Image 1 (cartoon, rainbow, N blue to C red):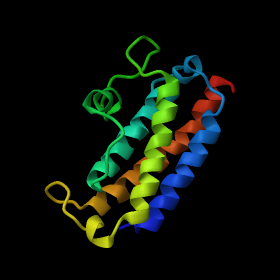
Image 2 (image 1 turned 135 degrees about the horizontal axis):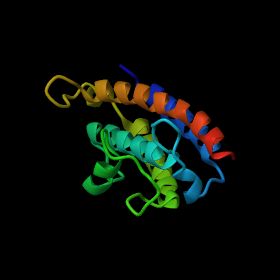
Image 3 (image 1 turned 30 degrees about the horizontal axis):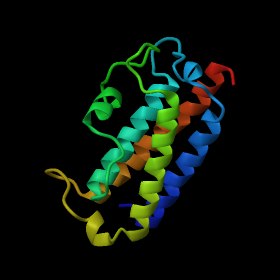
Image 4 (image 1 turned 135 degrees about the vertical axis):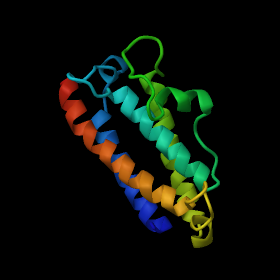
Length: 152
């Protein structure tokens, strides 16, 4: 299980890496679809925010998003195709930064007993944070390819 310090470092590093790849992109670039399937920057960033919401909820912190936003970018949701069913990229950027701020605050005060608290039927808050750190790191790697795809 991750310690609060590990969580802070991992999610902070991912935030810096992702921010570097998407810096200067506009909404139109965020919805460019990769060939042969996959998801665009807009969807992947929204999906990461959903995961961060799950961590915040598991650790008894205030989530960033409500159920409608979570449903739009959650696991198994439809791809973002650049219509009117996605959030504006500027909103995603702001919410991503806010998710980092909330994680930083929570990690600074998180205790081992809070991480060991049950979450779901067979998991703990720490187990969920550990899973989502892997999950987010995997998606973080997608941004290098997606940034190259949009040509910026």
